[in-house]
Structures are given as structure tokens and as C-alpha cells.
Length: 323
Image 1 (spheres, one colour):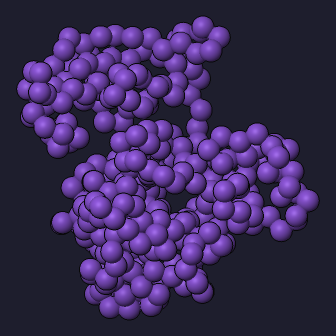
Image 2: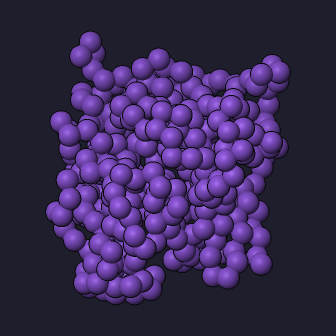
Image 3: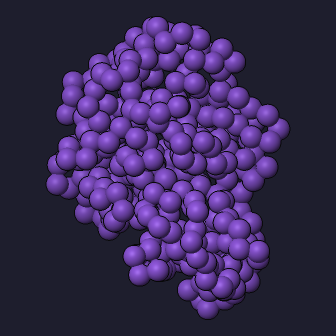
């Protein structure tokens, strides 16, 4: 096993991989970062190559199953009281999670925010959270609830797509790689592996704050994902309100957020292009300003293309508010 790829993974009592794990694993240091108190089971898996390891496919060996109990800062163990994520449905839209979408125009307030403590450019001032890039000053932005289009809603789940382009970013942010495959792209790791930046070598921080615990795993571009971007299949479904062709469709048009407009290097008008994934190949393509799906139009390391998010929310784990 000396040349094998070793991964520490969360499992159940029988050793089966737990896909909806309430924790993040750093495979380089074999450290488990859990998001709640409780009992967990872990095991080390060995694989022939990195691709098998990433997809938990064809393991060649597995260690014994270890049972561990997490401890908080106070030294307490046991199960925490389950907290439900808030999701509000109002006027046909859903409000869930937060992002720095509100621009701060008050210069005095901006100065106070910039002088406050921060963690990876996320500042806290007077009980509110802001983002402020001290290296490339664009101003301060306040974290506010994200507005989502409700593509489908049942008693158990809601399929949501952001009603604005949250931010700009390269599909794959490094020209020397420039991969078009979703599962190997920087954007995939930025959205789904936000506590582990080593793997994707991300040089820009994620801006969204979404409760991962209530998200339902989706299949996108050949890999399971919790936070994704629109697929061609999704954007050509009549049941979601879109045209079944790839031609221009006003319902596919997504307006840029103020954060995206002010932080991108491109001149953004009322509308902008955003990234899309081809379902079968997992390749990066775009939707243009007229709502047309274009294949192979842009290089993957173009940072000015917008990012639109898609999530599937488990409503049974949410505090659902109807207004």
C-alpha cells in the first residue's frame, strides 16, 4: 500500500461511506472538523489513484472502524439540540443563507468596518457581518439574505436558483490547468469544500454563507455536489419555466448583484454571462446576456463570468416561514 492514496472518511457502523456527513475532513492531516457534538465512525481507505479516491470508488483496503465522540470547547460531549435553518418564502421567492450583496455607501461606516477584526476578509461590526478587501479596495458589502428563484417546491424539499449573479470567478482559476471538467474545477471546490483550500489552491475566498447541513446532495457533471451551478438540463426544462431549446430565453437571464458589478474587472451592465455545466460531459459553458446557452465560448480561467448557485434544500430540517 506504499503507493496508495489514503483517505480518512466518515462511515456508518457497517463501514459504509456517509455521504451527508456533518463534518469536514482534512485528508492531509487526518483531522476531523465536526459541526456538532455526537458520536461518529471513521475509517481509513486506500485507493490505487487519486481519481478513485475522490469518487470513493474501488477501495483496495480499509482500516478498522473507529468510534469517536466529539468534544466542544467546554469539554462537553453528547448530542447537541438540533437547530433548524431558516428559509422564508415570500412573493414567489425564497430567502435562505447570506451573501455580501448590500453595498455600504456611508464612508464613515466603511472606515469603522475596515478597522474591525476580520477572518479571511469577513469583518464583524456592531453585530453585522461585512466583506472588505483591504488589498484591492472596492468598498464594504453587508451580508444579507440571498434571494432565490423557486424552481420546484414540495412538502419535503425546494430546488432553488439564485435570482442574481452572486459573484464573478474563473470556472477553473489557473491558466496552466484550465480544466473544463466540473469535478476538477476550482469553482466546484470553492462552493463545496469551503473549509479546505489546499486541495484546489484557491486564491479567492467564497462569499456565500449557506447552511450545508440542510442541503440535499445532487448529481452534477459526474460528481455529487451540494452547492452547484445551473446545468443545461435544468435550464431547458419547461417545468422550471424555461424554454426547451438552447436559444435566447428571457427566463434564463439573471441580473448581476451589486457585489458582482463592483468587484468584477469587466464592465457589467444590466445583464451578464454566467457559468453553466453540460450534464453529460461536465464541461463548462455559459448563458449569455440574452439567455442563450452557448457552448465553448469562453476560456475557463476568465474571472469576469458570473456565478449563479443552485441548491436543493431539505425543508424537513428547516424552519419554514411563509409570508
